[in-house]
Length: 241
Image 1: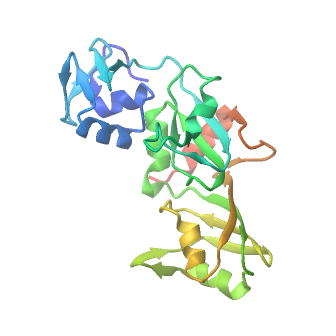
Image 2: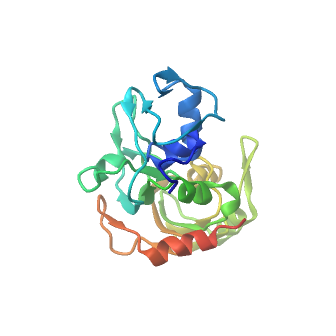
């Protein structure tokens, strides 16, 4: 966490304030939603300290005193964003009664998917885990509407092209004819659903059960817990430079 007098880039400052990840904060700045000392700032190179008055959408933000690392078992029907213009339920709202800090999600699950999603107010942690080079495994249990053959599982491991986008999983294991385990290291939008749809297989249920060294275990839908120090260090250790 930067010192209150230290000047840092505005997007990093917003991330340390728990506004959003560093990358998402860049877009918030570009959208003209940030003011520094009463002036709208859209330049990403701007440097600020906590002695400056920084507001987002008219509300002042401050550096968080405590770093939080939270695991939520997201139920279906919740979106992973700070707010939703369509009025849908936001996953972060499930944490608001337990944390005074402004937490944002690291990565995403689509509205209809369930399971593990991480939240933090640590911009450096979020940036490392979210970077494409991190190569952290994410494990999913998927129930399908049609049988999945061993041949199809092998095909998904080799990779398929959908609308000129290449999708490939690290491993696809058939647990039952209509239940599979898939491990990814990428984070493309609706990746598993699109891979299965390319083989005329529908997705009935998709649950993320592991991210790197952290497992969902017996956490029930809607419940959350803090990551242990060992889990946080383990996730960072898994990130490839």
